[in-house]
Structure formats: C-alpha cells, structure tokens
Amino acid sequence: MSTVKLKEIYKRFDETEVLHDISLEIKEGEFVVLVGPSGCGKSTILRLIAGLEEVTKGEVLIDERVVNTVEPHHRNMAMVFQNYALYPHKSVRENIIFGLKRAKVARDIIEERLKKAAKMLELEDLLDRRPSQLSGGQRQRVAMGRVIVRDANLFLFDEPLSNLDAKLRNRMRSEIRKIHREYKTTSLYVTHDQVEAMTLGDRVVVMRDGRIEQVGTPMDIFLKPVNIFVATFIGAPAMNILDARLYPGFIELEGQKIAVNNRVEKIFVPDSGKRINLGIRPDFFIDENNAEPGASLSRIENALIDIVEPLGFEREIDATIGSQHIKAKLDLRTTAGEGEKINLCFDMDRVHLFDPETGRNLACDAA
Image 1 (tube, rainbow, N blue to C red):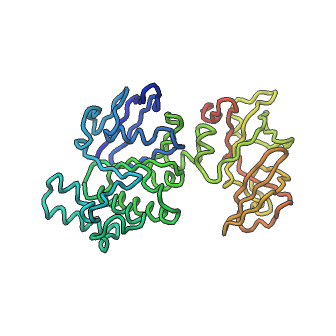
Image 2 (cartoon, helix red, strand yellow):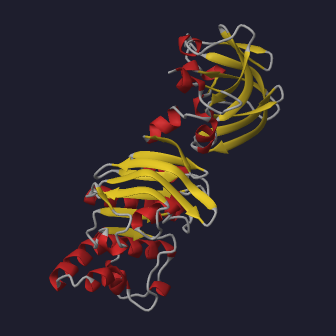
Image 3 (cartoon, one colour):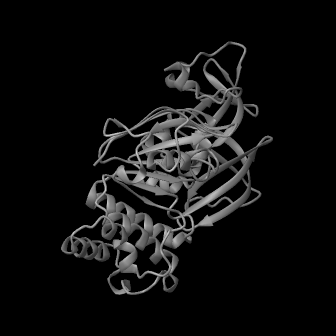
C-alpha cells in the first residue's frame, strides 16, 4: 500500500490554469474521494498522480518519492476508467489478465488471482464472453477485476459508476467497498455524485474551480461545512440558506425573532444587527406537533406549505416563510397538507451562520 502527497500542485493547459495550489496527503490504506462539479479539476488530479498528465508546478510524491518524471507503468498503480476501457476483441478472461501477461507473471499466479477476482465480482460464468455480450454493470466489474489482479499499491477510480443506472450504481458502490475491505489498498476515487462521496470515503475532498474547498470525514463535511458552497453541494436535499439578521440574543427571520444559544453568542454580534445567511439542513427540522415535550428547540412559525412529496417513510415539504423558500424532511407523522401552515422546530446547535459576502461559515471564522 502506498502513500500519496501532492505539494503545491499547479496545472495549466496552454494559458488556462485548471489547478491552483493543490496540497493533499493520502495515508496508507485510506480511501479518499474527490468530489465536486464537472470541470473543477478532480479528474486532472487523478491523471497527474497516474502520470497521464505532466505537472506544471509542484510535486507528486508516492511513498515519499517524487514521481513527476516517472512513467505511469513504473508507479505500481491500477486505474478504473469511466468508459471501462476494455478490449472489445478479447474475452473477459483475457481482459482481466492482460496486464499480468504483459508483465510476464507466472501462469499459476495469474490463474490464482483471476479465480479470486472472478469469484469476488461474480464473473465466474462470464469469463469466455466478450464485452459486447455484457451489461454495463458487468463491464464495470470486469474493469475492476483487471485492477484487482494487478496487486497494485494504489487504486485510482475515475467516475467509474457514472454510466450506470441508479440501481446498478448502488450495487457497484457495495462492490467497491467490499474490494477495499478485502485488499485495504490505498484508493483515490473521483466523482461528482455526493452520495458516492459520503458512502465510500474515509475522507472527502470537496473541490471547486481548481481549488480544494474542504477536506474531512463525510460527517465533518456534512455537519461542519466551511462555506455555503460546501454546505449546499453536500447533502440532498441541499441545505436551506435563508437571509436573516443577527442581534444579541436572537436572529430575525422574516419578522420572527428566533432565540439563539451560547454557541451562536460566541460569534461577534453587533448591536445594530448583522446581515447573515442562516443555514439549516432539511433533515434537522421537526414538525412542532411531533416534538418531544419540554425539548429546548428553536422554531420557525407559520411556514406555508406549497408542495408535499411523499417518499415512503419520509415526506419532503416545500414551504415559504415570508418571501423565502424552505425545504424540510419530515416523517410520516406529519399530516399537514399543501396550502396549510406548519411550525418547524430545530436544534440551534445544528444551525450555521454564513457571511453573505464571502460565503464563509462564521462559526469557523470565530473558532
């Protein structure tokens, strides 16, 4: 298993700089996910580590060794591509073991690794088929089988599930987790899907416009976003961002005064009222009718329900408070319907206050 370090990496294509001062360390055996919108530079980072692109400035280190000029086949890594990259004229068996045969690995070792990978990925009955005879999910499993048998020190995944439907993506996420649990190989995974990031990563790296916005565990990213971009990119539905004002002792939202707690009081509060963005995740709302008696909760009153979306056990509520829209994820006990008003309770410890000009989380700045 390898360690990976990126030190002050810049990447430029002609006159366009696509990566700006990227520094990141991936520990031995860690599964790290790069997530962000299309064009943010996450796949470029993967290609720099793989040696498929040249670094403009900075250093890529694998196991403390600078590899900027080392050829890809000398970096002892294996990569799964978005488009599978299978040889159409070769069988599943030949696709999986192709790299081993080129490396002149002994026949008995090849057969042993092939057998283990085929069993893990349920490819045993498909070894004599060609890629054209396989489904998308089967092709992706073949691509992962080719990685597994390599016995590499580093696995790189470049949006491997983006071409699959939702049901197959769920299954393949489980397959990838099983592979990592079995082999414990250092892995770097690129995706634009925040669900994949949250469910797969030991740590998540959120990117935007060629820069790293935040690095942390999935729950750190979810519960303690450093800015509005991270807060709204991670989480589905996205965090509510509401225009409000902060005063000593309360937040004013659309004419309502919402009492604050000690955590909020630690943030600098001017007497005149500071304009803020109030951030509350839909997951953290509770219908006042279902709140525990005596619970110390804050409250938004008389939210007018526009849309109710039944989602099995949960109901997503789209509502308005004054001129602003708000979304809440409630359980089946909520009976209020469209056109009715509802009081929404929440724990002030789950609230975020953002600077509307910079987007920064004020709690992070005050820490």
